[in-house]
Image (cartoon, rainbow, N blue to C red; front, side, top):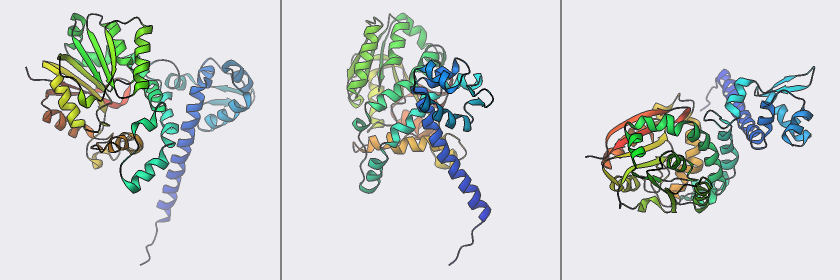
Length: 356
């Protein structure tokens, strides 16, 4: 049977595909310009390709070609009369600097995960997944770069205040743990801000734990420690007043088991503060969410597959608020509230308590 095609729709979808492919390449140019310091050099003021290259300590020919991509993508402005390039201030605020609004580190996911497409394709055919170890140390570095600015800008003054009286308890002195702590930057920030409390971070990645310990030592912190541990074996004694998890639950092999271990590790009336992906659990409810394609792709290329590689649940990045609430309830948490994360459109903060 012959199916007639709507040529207008064919053309429109062709344009959509080209736009997606162009966007992927532009993302890699942003990554290059960020990691080489080119964006920082441009933020310092206008200049020719030679002047900007000298300012950044880079080879002019590479700088000029990369700037060609960024100019034609609308990221950088160009004056042909003076041959000067300019990074508009409104763009610079989103692409440079240490703050939580710098979005340039997000670009590194494309190059990192693209390398693993062949292995994930094999998992499509054979089952299983790509193990977490295959992504390191690159994944450790990318996640640290992605979260560091957010934590510096929002953890103490934006995220913790969402928990109610927990900051006051931290000031008085309590026991705190973090599951899937990565490079430990969030825990180190809290340990420095609340010297009367004691903090322990747990993560599977030895390279990440090494970086966490090094930062703690560099800061002279004596109230924080880090251990290499599968958080499915999180110790329950001595109990904690608070446990944190920053984008760490959805890619666990046994997320329900980890939530149960967290519940068992908390004292009565304790806090579980979980930052995780802001999305709905049902696919149809994510249609129209401009971030949804990114989230499902990240899940396919990392979060789901590292869980399946361990024979795990394969919960995936887009487990969504409805399922998250259900699983928190099944683990025995009460009084669950969900909040937006300042300067972070990708995540929500779940604040859950244990029964008193």
